[in-house]
Image (cartoon, rainbow, N blue to C red; front, side):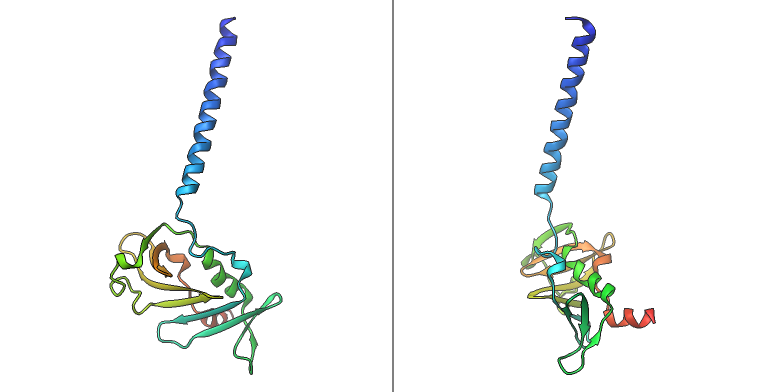
Amino acid sequence: MKRAVRHQLWLFGAVIVLLAAAWWQLRTDQHDAPGTLLPFQPDKVTHVALKMGSAPSEHYVKRGEHWWRGDSATETRADDRRLEELVRIAAAPVQSWQPASSYDLTKIGLEPSQAKLELDDETLRFGAATAIGHNVYVQAGERVGIVSLRYMPRSAQSQSMQAQ
């Protein structure tokens, strides 16, 4: 076998090994990833309730393609884009999870929570910002996750008024 052919075979083998290692690393990273705040698809959500601090709760229902605010007596159209932002919080990537019992919930702002977001039958409680980075504590069930501060909900009503 000529030297050039042997060299090409070694190169081809090295490329195969590198591709296999990259594939294995990607699969390992995906398996070890903490996941998202909630396990369902945000586009399936039809009911949203948002409570910010001591302000009254805001309730929304999706009918067809649009979101509506209010009780059954007086429904008004809500800002669809803003509600879709709230719903997408369910898919926020979590940096890490810990059992809620690992924390003093008062110290991390979860008792009382700064914001409470209900998406269908799931509840997310938002606490204080972390000491390092631009992150916030979020309680989902019996776990507390750390997510980017950009996923902290804001009042949909105040956003709608600012747009006018």
